[in-house]
Length: 127
Image 1 (cartoon, rainbow, N blue to C red):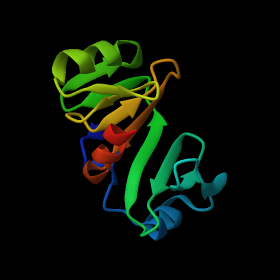
Image 2: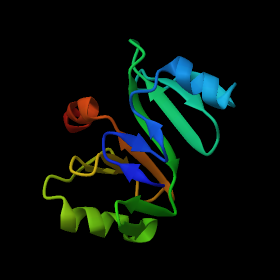
Image 3: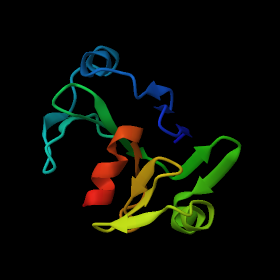
Image 4: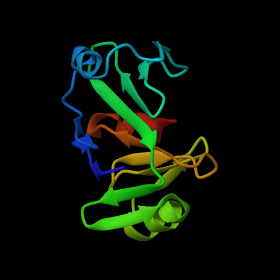
């Protein structure tokens, strides 16, 4: 996974609308509302989650290795990397959340990483 914090995941921009995603990827394997009230478009290897107003909130994808600029971090080392390089990192509901890198992940669920839009960090902190 190539992450540009708060901007894009593997070239998929956080400025994309639901219609943009549907046009680019077609019909998802699953679409519906998740347990936290976000609308999901699940394509198997990548999941897009939207607020009711259509704003993209999260992009979750498989990331055996996370690329942050010139740095490549294997999933197995991601928790330690985040704790070392993001002094604002915290844990919620089993997830390590990194405001500095704009991501959240469950270390026990390899290799899924969720990239976060900047506007949703407060929701994670409030959990």
